[in-house]
Every structure is written in C-alpha cells, then in structure tokens.
Length: 298
Image (cartoon, rainbow, N blue to C red; front, side, top):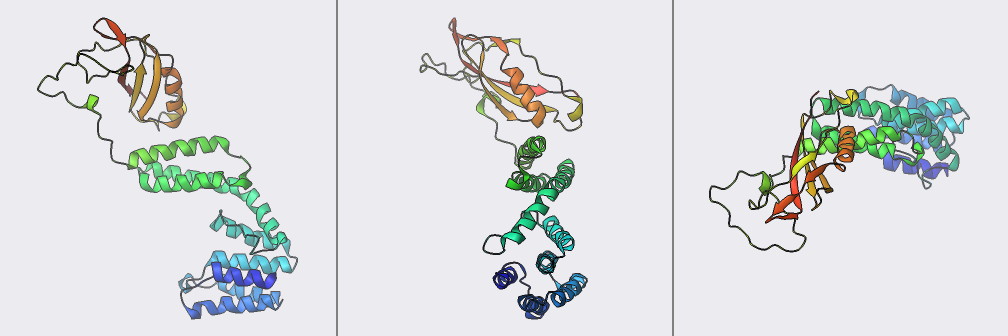
C-alpha cells in the first residue's frame, strides 16, 4: 500500500515542469518506498526550504512529509504537515485508492478541526472582494466557499454563514451581469396610442400594456425597515413584481432587482400581506401585474 500511495501521489500531485525539478521528489519517493523515512524527510525538508523559483509544489511536499512522519509514529508533526496541506487546498483528501485507512483518518480529523476557521477566513476575503465591487472575483470566491461549507466533514456547521454566502453570491452574480432589458411595461410609451382589445383569454393577467385597464390602488403596501446591521451593505433601490388578484390580494411575487439577502427575505414576507383595490376593466375586477420600486433609506 505504501508503494502504491507514493507512486500515485507523485504521479497525480507532485508533477513538476521539468525532469530536473522532479529528481528531488523522485529521490524522496524511492527513499519512502524503501522504508528509509528519515532520509526521505531530509530530502523533503530541504525542498521545503528551497527557493520558490524551483517551481516546487509545497502542498505536495507536505503531503509526502505527512506519510513519512506517520510511518515514523511522529503523529504531532504529521498532523502539522497535514494541516499545511489542508490550508493550501481545503477540498483535498486522499481517496481509498491513494491511501490507507490510517492516513485517510488522519486527514479527516485535521480537516474537521480546520475547515470552520478556513471558511471564516475565506468569507472575510470574499466579502472584502465584494466590497471593492470586484463582483466577478467575488462570485468565484463565494461559489468556492459554498462548496467548502457544504463539505460533508463540516457536518452542517456554519449554517448561518451559508445563508449569507448564498445571498452574497446572488448579489455578486446580479451585479456582475449587465442590467436586464426592461420589460415592455417599463419602456417609454409609444407615441401612437395602442389598439384597444375587446376580449381577453380566461385568466389573463393585465399590466400597464393595456391602457384600457384601471390599475390597482394600494391600500396596504408597507415596506419593512432596514436592519441596522446591514445598512452599509444594502442597495438603495430594488424592483419587486407583484401579481394582484380580483380581490386585491397578492398571489405572486418576483424580486427582479434584489437589495440584500436578509432584507429581501423580510420584504417578500411583508409583500404577501399587501392589499390593493383591484384593477378594473369595464367595471369588472381583473388580475394585474404591477411593478413596485423599493427605495430604502439608510
């Protein structure tokens, strides 16, 4: 098993750009395979201290060091080497084909301890990227962070952070993308008056496109207050689409321009209780799609 793991690890993780750069790692492989662990460590430690210009993969060195240290029974040092691997690549864990159960268990224990703190650090970095309005990179960082939080060895920890990360991911995607083309009801009215229709299909939802319809009138349309904890993070304006039925009740919601993950949830909850005097067509109440611009004060 040791020889198989060493060979796979070098083939899969320790590849270097040139044969000369592979030689020290090949030497470490041969020493490890020959159970000459102390000598292998000497080679690996020298590589660890070498100038970065050599193009050596430090994560791979720590992976190999952990094997030697575990073989020597130096568990504490092996854990430190594994910790360095996890810090460099939190998603890495050796597979059954690569490592013995003992090695995989050691990696698992270290990952379980380290992942929450790594996630917190990466959240701070992603949030700083978002605050700089570098939305493309923020999107990438938040996506990677979601993968980390959803790792099985996180065991559901940091659930509150996951909600924030998912929200900021949505905001990053929306901010990085070009603004959506306005729907017809948002466009400037045509100079020529539209033709008036005399019949509509059953269940038709009217909008400002049909000027013959009297729009609904708000009777209760309260917007929740912005929580003090997010006042510096929330957008100034959002856009909410509501569908109002023949009784003036809100039966459909679509938040087309979001403001902040926490506030968005509060807004949608409040909007379900909004009430209107229904839209009218020829004296009859009809369903209506209405756009509501949400403006917040900080």
